Image (cartoon, rainbow, N blue to C red):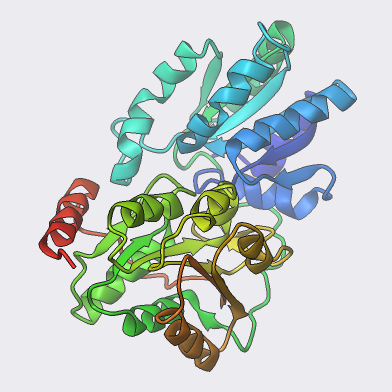
Length: 381
C-alpha cells in the first residue's frame, strides 16, 4: 500500500505547489493527510470538481507551478468543460496533475451507481486525450507513475491523471481533529426520523447521495414505513434538489420534500435560484447541515461558515426557517412548513457521524425508480 505521507513528498519533489479537490472515499487516507498538514493557502476543498480544475488553473497562472486536483471518477463529468475548454493544450495549455479515485472498476465489488462510470473511466480519459497511469498500491510503481504523469502534464501543457484503484492508500500518518459535536444538535438520523414522522403519508421524498439516503432507507425498514414514495439519489451528488423541482413542476398538487446535505447543496448552489423562483406551494427543501463531507471521510465543508437561509431568501424562496438544532425547535419548524406556502427552505444543524452498522438499500436504483413512479401514478391527488 502507498503511504499518504511518502506519496505527498513525491508530489512536492515534482513541484506540486497546491492541492485542491473534492473528497473521495478511495482517496480518504490521502485527503486526511493533506487536510492535516497543509495550510489553508495550499489546500482547498472545492464546491465541485469543475471548480477545482478552475481553481488549480488559477494557481498555475499565478505561479507557473503544477497543482494537484483530486476527485472521484464520478466527478469527471463536472470537470469536462474546464478540462476541454480551459486546460486543454489546444486552448490555454495548463499543466495539471489529477488524482482520481476509480470507483466501479470492472471486476471490483462496488455500489451500483458506480458500475457504469467505473467501466467507462479509462475510455473516457482516452477520448479526452488525457494521458493516465493506474496506481495499484505498489509504492515504487506509484512514484514512477507520478514522475511520468507530472512530466507528461508539463510536456503537453495539459492535464494528466493518476487513477487510483480501491484500497491503494494506507492509513494516514496525520489527522486533523474531528469537528466537535454540538450538545444541542441531534444526529442526522434522529433528525430524519423527526422529519418523516411529521410529513403526511402522501408526501414524496427525494433524498440526496450518501448517508442521508441510507439512513432514510433504514428508518423506513425499521419502522415498517412505506418506502415507495422515496427516491434515493444514490449517485448524482448535488442534483437531488433539481430532481425534486422537476417532480414538483409536473405534480404541483403533491407535497415534495428534498432531503439535502450541506456538501451536496454547495456542489451546485445555483440550483437554489432555479428552485426558489418557481411558484411551487408544496415544495420543501431541507438542508441537513453537519459541516462535513460525512460519507467520504468527514472532510470539512464551508456549511457552517455561510448562511444557507440568507442565500435561500435571496434566491426567492417564499419561506425560510433556521438554522434549528434542538428536537423541540425542529418539531415546531417542521409543523410550520406544512402550512407555509413554498418553496420553503429549512436548515437543520446536525452532528457529524453515522452508525458503523448503517446498511445500504437492498433494491437496485432501477427497482427504486419503478416503485417510486408507480406510487406517483397511483396517487392522483
